[in-house]
Length: 397
Ligand code: ATP
Image (cartoon, rainbow, N blue to C red; front, side, top):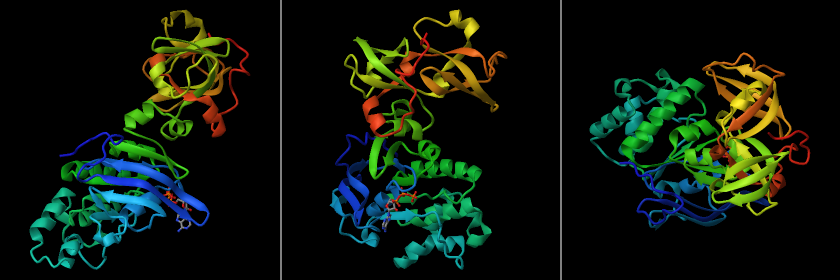
């Protein structure tokens, strides 16, 4: 059975993967800064980040394929830092399946058992082929299978060795989008069934969010934030995370007052409300906050109907700059005094024919959907545009 312990508190579980102060430098370049990370036993854990952020290096240090410059790797209570890859209870599945072309599927999967001198392999291999739903294909050669099927053989071949941890290095990278989507669900099913720890490296945020119960977002050799997909999406703590997972709109604002669970902010000439629990920025009066809101949380009302907007919603005014009908929703870009390219996704249920480029609109949303980031840090990181309080000319209604 799968366990979903909290990675931030789990620590000494029997089969946890525990990285302590692990780092990797190449000459003067640091690929992975000292990192403490616990992957709970039985979890599906994703290392997510753009190319070059250090996720593969981290995975390879767990596998033993890369020697850490400092730090330790524990599997449960065992320190495996000095062990060569083949002595670690882990297996790795790579993007290139590396199947033996001259062996059929059955023999590819049986390979690990035969190498260990095990004679009666049939039951185990049959079970493993059932698990990856390739029982019918046992006597085919790898070239007679699709890319997705070959990748499932690679997974079966790794799992038959009963590793405590399966490492997956961009395993779906070579597949087309549709097949990749199928394989994501398939891998998740397999992981749930076998219940062993999967550590998956990917640059694809949708893939990480679909499969993993915990995602570590990496940036520049560091874990920038770690949490469940929902938590990372709803409560990003940095602009990098807010933009790497989906899209976010940002407004530069200043703390006006704090009352109870709410922080009232000044932005442009108006006020916005932010739940105090949803901000990583200081909430002292005068403090700068970067207010974030996701495009799908926002409603768009034509300015003529502004009086119908319920009380208590955050609202700003703007003008539609662009709109794209994409079937399930219409994606608007709204030019507003506090953000020049506000993105708003409106589901196509009752389309308002007046919402076309040039229309004056009010954008409004439930304050509970607002998150706050430390503006000073975000500006230092160079990830915010220049639209903001100082440049605002019109009132934020
Ligand atoms: P990708 O998705 O492109 O594989 P990644 O996030 O997995 O990226 P890593 O492969 O971990 O990134 O590499 C992290 C950084 O370390 C990169 O800038 C890379 O160029 C550098 N690097 C990796 N291996 C070496 C090496 N053997 N020598 C020097 N630099 C290296």
